Image 1 (cartoon, rainbow, N blue to C red):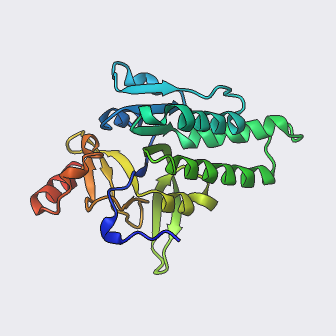
Image 2: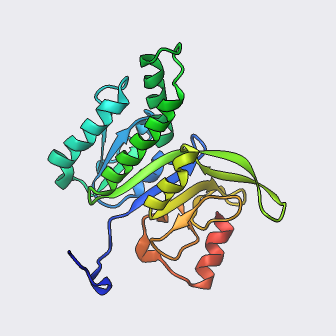
Length: 240
């Protein structure tokens, strides 16, 4: 049995999930990641990163078969390219879900519609993929679109909740595997983009990396800038 004293734990590699409406700037956030980055382009929006020399982009070898080609691609990255990169980005998991379900539908016998068992297979596929990414020892960023639903609390209040567009049966599990889940928004006052890192009744978020509740888009990966200073908190609140 291997035992590590908590005092000896060094800064771990992080798994982050960022989400927001299409076109808000999730993929653009990748340009702020320090070090060398490899982005796996699932939704074909990587052109917004044009000109950034620290970012390499790859796609699925077979876009019509993501269930087979993504695991092969991840293994190839781990075996042959892991030492070259500090960060691995999967952009984005919401489109990956759609692509996998489309593949199941095409290969099934229900006129292109995936069967009930296919949704369960998708969920296990996603969780295995995320665990594999997490165990690469790299900083991992997963993007997702935003979706909403109506939720009634025990006191009778009804909220419209915002959360990553990930299959609901595994949403809690996926968020549990991540150290940070951040919602990207645009301030109506300043027009600046920022991330909400603190959960509320209406927003799914999580931050186990530092103590920030909000941050500007450009500061998401600036963990050294973590502070509990009141002035900074007020500034973040006013711009997000």
